[in-house]
Length: 131
Image: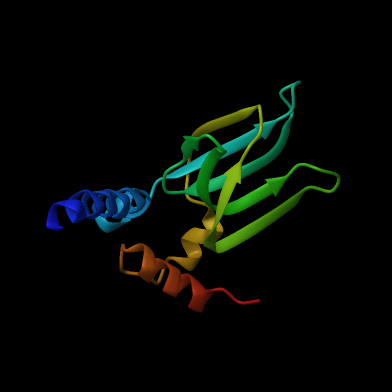
């Protein structure tokens, strides 16, 4: 009876560890890295750009990341901020990923935050963001 529970326990432990991979860099205490995710058309013209906070991962469903900013190239152009971050999956045929700097508006929100954990940064941003 106990031998049947061991594989189940191992599977649950592996699943719990793998779901924590995305936030592992935040738990290590280092500042998050930023990337620019660019979606283009077949002519190479930019349609959307995203600023990702943390890792950008490619999977079966597309590119997954936590976005803090989105820029839509349209007439007129539109920039949207997500101070608390927004889970995004981009499934497009033409996607480029490059390193980026932390946006200035986000830097000003995080200016008062002395802590490096993701939760503390979000709490500080929530208090600093005004509608």
